[in-house]
Amino acid sequence: MLSECFIFGVITFLIAGAQCQDTEVFAEAGSQAVLPCKYSSKSTVAPAILWNNGNKGTVWRKDKNGLQYWGSSWTHRARCPHSQFERGDFSLQLNDVTEQDGGIYLCRVVGDRGVTESRIVLIIIKVSVSPVVPMSGSDVSISCKVTPESHRGTVRWMLNNRPFGTAKSVVNEKASARVTGNWTCVVGYKGKEGRASATLTVKGIIHPSKDYAKLYTAVGSAITLPCVFSPGLFPVKPALEKLKPGSLFLHTPDRLPASFIASSPSSQPTSDHSATLNEVEFEDQGTYRCSGVVKGQWLTRNMQLVVAKIDSSTPSKKRDSVTLTCQLTDTSEVVDYEWVHVVHDINGTQSVESIQKGKTLSLGKVSEENQGEWTCRFYGQQGMLGNVTHHVPMMGGLSGKKSSSVSNNTTAVVGLSILLLVLLLVLVKMYLNHQRRKRILQYPALETIVHTTSNEREERERNREKK
Ligand SMILES: *[C@@H]1O[C@H](CO)[C@@H](O)[C@H](O)[C@H]1NC(C)=O
Ligand SMILES: *[C@@H]1O[C@H](CO)[C@@H](O)[C@H](O)[C@H]1NC(C)=O
Image 1: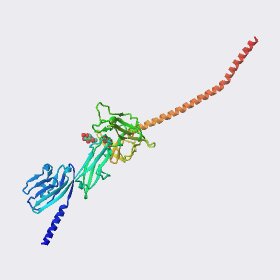
Image 2: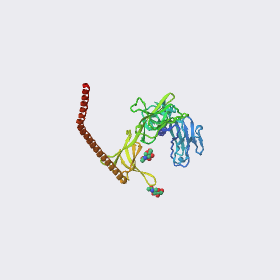
Image 3: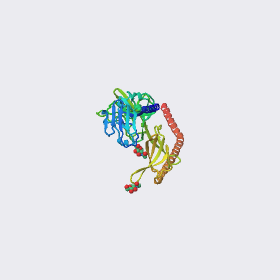
């Protein structure tokens, strides 16, 4: 009798112990939560199931006779998929969960093998941003709310899938591009983790999306310099300017490129103040600034224009060969160069052949095969940044002979000119010598002439005095 009592006590203790084993289920507010409940039985007789919520009473119930009941507030949101019943799975699906759904749930299955009860704690995580869309530069707070509060555990944050170093459940920041993106709150409780996210968008300049973003372009091509504000944001004194190099802190405007076309001022207020460079020159590289005043606040975003060109040179020794060098005004992001030869076939279709890696390309002898368009593609850590194309003129083959004859002619002309010049110099020298000799011969004669005339004059005067 006593031992029976003891055994009964142990059993009740075990059952009670088992009952206290809570299962935590995390769910993000607005998503679907699945609360597990298992009951294994080989019997074909369907058991009775009861899902109960600690605060709100019955969620869903199925009697032995197959009749179902829903609690008043769960009619549309709670579901227990019958297809899983055969496997002894009586999990409850709750759709579109809210903070109020957080709490304790009980699953009670009554079958031929007795009664099982499981206790599940549904933990709702909600991330909210306030204000929903802050102005660039204003205060913003991102908060992570966990219900029930008793199950908060630890909190850590991820911003755009990278850890954001804080364990606080409310993060206060100044709205900027740095904190824009996807905020994820990771809640840890008893070794399990649940997460919820929210997106923070900041009102202000949306293009370029971050400061000092690099724009790659090639000499001669056209490019749009973006300067776009959030929709519905019409800045006062919008401007897209080029900044003087070296004026990193002063930001003095520089002369605009020759082919710069600002967006035409329209009568309608607009949030797009992008400008175009019609034909980029190598000197157009540098820092450009998009700015405007919104609600008394001056918003700016800088961008870096990187211009690429190809320098072609001919080594003095080998007249037919060409060396191409891929030049960029800023190579800080470039990790690799690749040269491709663009081939146009008879049908006009383009195809490219990857030829060589590296900044420079040496074409040993320009021939029909390797003349034409050569493109230098430059790559960054994330892939291709841009490309620049150079046209190598035909020099080998037939035109090669022509060009060499042209150069022969040039040498002939140059030689002849030098010869003529020397001849001219010799002639001039000879003429001068001749002149000099003539002068030396002339002078005594001139002297006698002067002498005789003066003698004559003296004689005449003497004669006059005598008279
Ligand atoms: C040119 O086009 C024709 C017909 O479309 C095709 O049969 C031929 O192979 C093409 N030639 C080349 C060099 O691609
Ligand atoms: C060069 O870049 C332009 C624009 O990204 C692309 O359309 C073109 O195919 C590229 N050319 C080559 C040869 O890679």
